[in-house]
Image (cartoon, rainbow over all chains, first blue to last red; front, side, top):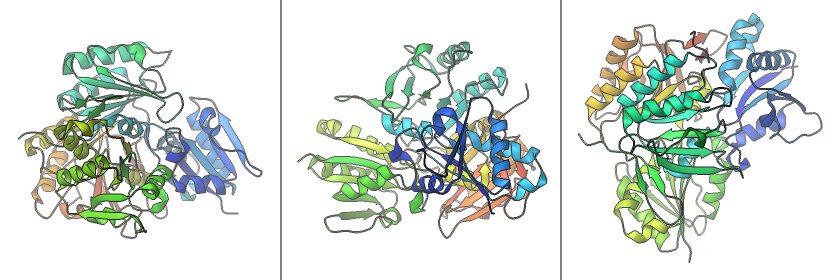
Length: 250
Length: 250
């Protein structure tokens, strides 16, 4: 048997944002592996085994997927968004590198998806239309001091910034601190966008300023985008358009 | 008539990477507007008018698209990749803001796509698996000094970096200088990935180090990804896997 492992991105939620490449992989799979709410997005069918696991067991889940592929199964590891952006791809490669040599020559590939910041940016306009950075605000896997350093340098570089995992119940203080640092570095008038669960029926978009933003506007299903100094709002009936122009005066 | 304007991303090249949402918009359109090679990716059909234009006329093209939508046409502006990342969405909103008030209430939206850096990262492994930034290296619309400043700050922040438009015939010196700055800031052993025309039959992937990189490895169809200090290579039969682990030691 020739097994394989595909690490696939399901996009932000709407089925119309799943690439045909990923749909095809799901149709050919024998096993789906992932975090419970993402596996729940895959339709059950005869011959398909769903392996849903809880958060924070990414390495165990990766090993299990690699073992099954090595045993000849056709395995899809699912992430929401893009698997390469704060999602499962890096975890699978960590497990692969630490595992048996035979895993290195498995048939393995990553299938990209629409990551949350791109879905959020599209919904709001084009806030990432100029240079930008993406930062995971969770300090589960890195020291908080590094996050603060990156926030200050990103502000100095005048990047637009996209933040993943801004705020969880177990560490609410980090995002409070993030807003303080950015208000200090960028001023109270800087635009900030809170985009929750974009493309699902729980979608909420809110555009405000750093001065008016409060931590409770974000949760773990929210992507936060802070504009650069040039990011602008076009007011109109309905939701405003937020965009960053392409040009910077010389 | 109720016209609309959708600004859509065609992904990096492979049709299997175009979202169903974009395919649907193309099927409903009366007019397709965009840069010649991107419009060429849309299949002609009865009732569909293709408006292909040359590079560097983004604002004219945007105005034309807005005028047609205001006149009741169903218009899709196409970009490769994602329209919100160094592509047409910001240009359309610039034209909209500068145009007649009536344009503000057009039915207009952005349909995200798989941007080049995500396709390139997926092909190589997961080099953007930790915090990263995206920088357009073209100095057509911003001063070169700002690009240099952002490169130095991004290196200090230890971001992985994705570079769009690294090198054109008209300005080959910028990318030469970029490599010098990064060698100085990150050292010669830092990993660099050149990903050309990913998902097309002209795809070329090359993984090397800043010390061994030469400017000629990039052209305008190449996305360049420079790893963070933690980005690693897993050697194997065939192409190596390049990835950035999720953890940073505290």
